[in-house]
Image (cartoon, rainbow, N blue to C red; front, side, top):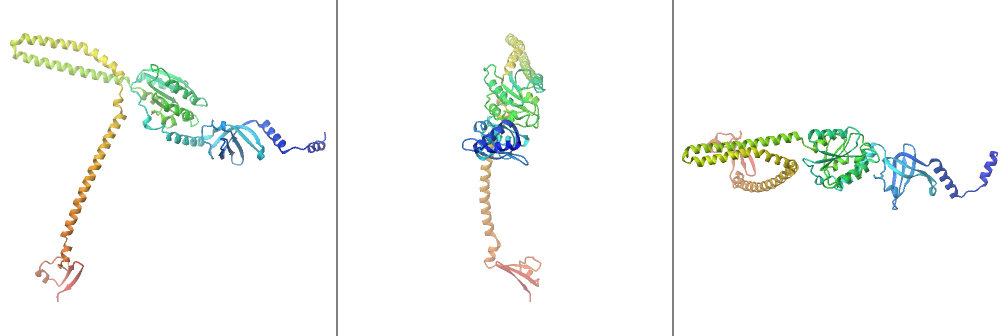
Length: 446
């Protein structure tokens, strides 16, 4: 068909505005479908219906976006102007304004700057709720019988934790493997914490370690997710966080009961050094043994001295000497067994009463009491000093020579400033200064 005929056929057909709008909409949707678009948020508006409308822009262009309510509720951060994001959505058209737009299906932060802004807002919200308060922190047990570890099975982290615990104090370790980055990581970490807390009392760990190696803010983002933070806060089991290197900080470090700078340090926080405990126990045993044995020998010597004085009671004394010897034999055989029993009990002994935190709280109360006493004493002394100062000021004022001058007396000084207390001294001067209460005059001898 000739071009002119084709054009004439097209022009002979009339379209309504709605028909043209529908055709344009279909052309856009059929040719583009879904697309991932990166840009900066601008003109964000949330309607009363719960739907969001905003623009994506770059250095030279702008495109409108519509985010329906059911999609908006799934976005885990606030949509604010200036944040760089990646939007997944369908290219479509809005006939009411003859404009093309993106029907948003998903919004993700793009770049470290955007993520830091989201992190700042999330931290402020959770801190306002009190999730990071020190009063919520739980005490890490001194000698845990079971330790739960939530981390990836790949990499050096799990090996470092296992080896460090084995070197310091071998104990039962329950490993719950999870993804430590990516979309699935927050859900898996949250589930691991919840499931550990649901275990029967005889299987539940005494402490949990949540760990992973270092990385960028994107790599560590799972440990900033709100679901993970709330799971850690709700855990009845004390938690040690060991995420990233020493300089890496995530929100899980703020909500955990203890933050370790590295996974290896987390293992050190979790268990004591068994060799040190054994040394302390042996030292206590030997010290107690030698003290008691020394006491027995001392009493034995005293008895021998007394027996020399009371020879006529030899049989009576020998009977007691034999009893003492029997006590010594029983002590030597019974004390090791007793100490062994006490040592077993020591392994389950809680040192919460010796916790530096509790000691610090007690000392803080003492300091507050002493401070109050000091303030009361200083206020009392200040009042006494003020009263004394007022009295002395009044006394000084009453004794001041200025009051004497007001009663008609005067002070006579030589031209050089020396006091002239007699007529003989005044007669030697050619010029004198006479001071009255209201001023001073100079006189010359005629």
